[in-house]
Length: 120
Image (cartoon, rainbow, N blue to C red; front, side, top):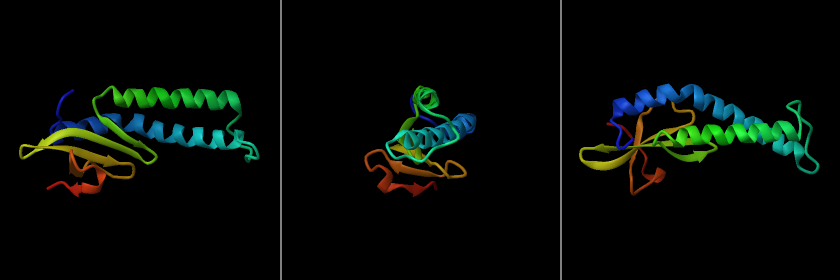
């Protein structure tokens, strides 16, 4: 997809929320399993190497699903998504950060997260 309108981006975010919620949960499980498998790691009830491999593979699948939408996946921990858009003729990225209740931020495409502002 090319550029999103704010309405389209908000609808796409709502559609993706179950997938994003799963991605966050699988990310946490994968991290816990990796820590348990490290030398001297604390045991986990999540399993061992087979569960880590399965969790890691599922995490890769979920990341790929997000990337195939045309949304920019800028960060995994915390999850950070950018939706290409225009505001008043200026290229921007509508920005959603894990924990945000809605899509309410943007930044100019050339500034990145440091230029993040609330939507007008």
